[in-house]
Length: 505
Image: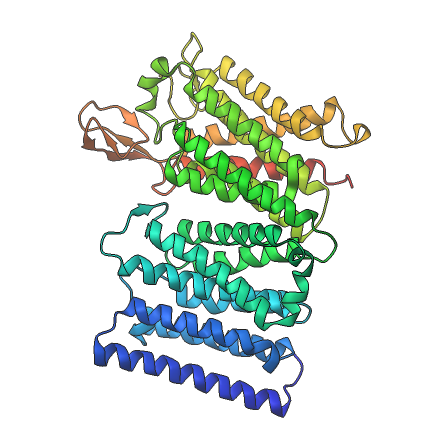
């Protein structure tokens, strides 16, 4: 890091002292007037966000910003551990948000400050205004409409306030920073497109706030907002902007229709909205169609023969209506691969993506179609006949169905590549990656996945409650539930594909 100039050092000290005074004042107000810790936290967040708006003019270089941000990360960690500054660290829930907040700014500064500081500023301002508005509105309403996607409880009114405040943050940054105003100049020519883009970005940020818990939104909101803005506002064309607007609309329709059709729970619908926006917004139909094929056909299969599968469902941890955990277990790895392909372009990422989709398809279809097998499946370790629905059990019909599903999604994905870039052998290799990953899933399900015993009927199940009573642990690692096993399956399929096609450009 280059040496700081006297002017930078002076401003650095001034800002540091100002922040410490603000923290001290917040703590004094909390103790003197009984203001809640949550209000104190959000006040500091909003105030810091406004301060960041002036930072590019004060610190043209990244070095002093990185230094002060790193110092406040260390201070926040120490304060949290020692119980200092309860006005910003004490909360009704365990949260590391005060550490994630400067950490997000540190990452954004390292990525953008030297070439596009306005992207770091606007992303942090979306967090500061949006998160603060969500908390203020959600807590001020007497009877808010509450919902829960992950561990934190949120309100519909607070989420709406988050989206509106995010749009205000975008507008304020465009008005205050000429560099950001110039960046969105191509969109300014069409007020309708500008409004649609602002709404799309704000909805995306609002969904991350709704889906994040324990302060993680202080990371997810600014980082994902910056990723979208950097991708769409690259100055080359407006095609990416239009694609992201369309992605938000498509994702919203998919989530709503799936929820109304009872393919998804409300948490699963939120996760689907985020995942679909990412996949189509950054990858277009090439990346969307394989995972959409998996989702649609798997949802239909899960509803086929429901009467016959009803007895088996009592053994599974979750039913056919998917929640956020199931959506992310099956599609989270694919979403991460897509983001990596944007940050680190490499054609092999797409093959790894198809390997991940092939893996979750093989696993899901093997389970759904294996239920129709006339003979009982065999345990993958003992090879003994076991009851249908037993974790780690395989059947010929299930394996064949899994192989067929992996072939279908792989073929759909390869259709977007030039004919000379793939062959039947490529489909077979991708399907093989999916089957191999499905084998790992079965092995983990048979050996390490947590299982419980029903105290009423004595059956072994993945559920924590059965026959209306709490089950007791029977075997396996407590934290390795079905979602964790499915996540490992998806990652394994991607890793196998990436390694197999390592030598291909």
